[in-house]
Length: 331
Ligand code: A2P
Image 1: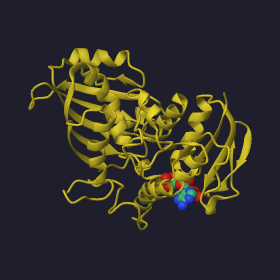
Image 2: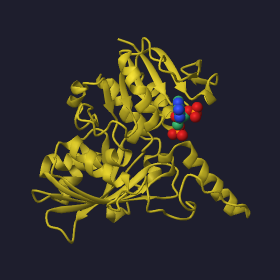
Image 3: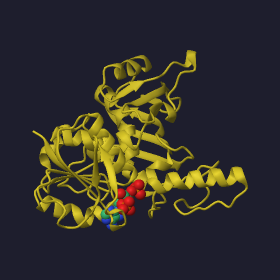
């Protein structure tokens, strides 16, 4: 049965991709309400041959809405998601605002779709992008070998910071090519031709919030409360697709051959891993693609029962918009 869908943050990087995913997947839509800030009210966005007028988000925006996809930042979700739920909509929230709430399921549809039934507040959370992409690689191995610990470093694209992150990298590249002044507003220092070992804000233990999301959200999604995770999240001058270098430690001894084979039969993830042919996935390989790609699978040389691997995924798509639309499909 077709649904009335609302997108909050329809003019943003993730909102725009949500529209693309709804269209490509032929999601059954009876009505589409596009919401953003007052700045965007009155703009039109084309969808399936119609121009849809963007409306200003208010507490009364959700009458008759079945599913509200939120992609306008945590503060907006905290303020408006309860209004949407009260109006009877199921909220699928892309921000971090509700992810660790015990009454809010945190879902990757390939991993824990059954959790959708426990949306006690009418809110379901979409996990952090780096966490989703990492778990797409790790979950098939977890089922086979029992995941105990993750040691990771991420290489995160600027589109993870929204439209402004993309604009900042572009401005800096152009300025550096043409001898102009670079402007740093989104990032703490120059991102063009540089890498920045800070994603989100620092916490008292010297980890960043992004790094702790990997720990806390992985535990919740996998249902492994004693899972150990340490990671360094790094912003790199890539427009789109995150990469993560991971050492995954298991209960049982993994095999490289079996690990490669596991991905052949798994939805949403595939392997591209043939050192003899210099084959490995890069962010450009997954850009605008649904599937995550795993490569560089090898035995870890430091830790027993561990594999080193590399996973890439389009974080605007599987890391955000696609995952949210897949949750809507479960509903
Ligand atoms: P707007 O375009 O009107 O500012 P991004 O992550 O790419 O920066 O996009 C953020 C999205 O969230 C945009 O669609 C933006 O709308 C929307 N947004 C940001 N703040 C608010 C707000 N207070 N109320 C409604 N929408 C908001």
